[in-house]
Image (cartoon, rainbow, N blue to C red; front, side, top):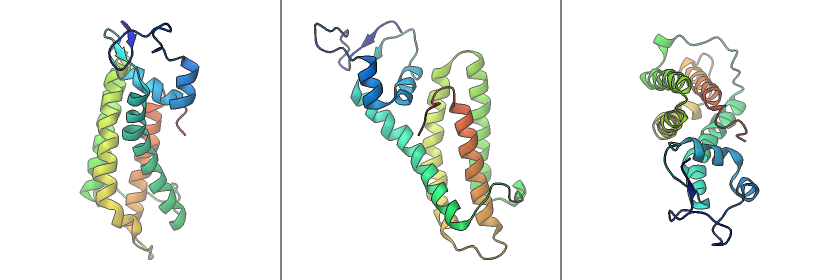
Length: 183
């Protein structure tokens, strides 16, 4: 980066008392959040580094991502879902499933091209939008599909599980270079 500055845009110096040691920041906010913060900025410009910015990334990106995973894990465990079940054909899945999978495939394609250009900031920004859509559009509008009791041949519920499983696994693979230690 041109310079790493504090949240007010001032250069960090020990003598000013506004310097943040890497070890302290890594312990306080986590290395994935720090990596995300660095990756989302253009290296040609100044990076304004602060704990507040890290908390915002944690809240809007990582907590949302974890919450979607926790939602899936809890209901999949309760219903005994296994990813190896026979896949529901795409033409039998609701529009919302096809929409989120289409969005996922667009993210994968864009990430592939951006990684090839070493444009990690483009990957991060696209992923932020995708994670928000996944949580606020897909999961929110499909909760009832996961809540229904399993009764025999419930393809709709299985399709919801298969879709969300595919999305979460693929998202982890796409973002592994940026957030490899996500917990």
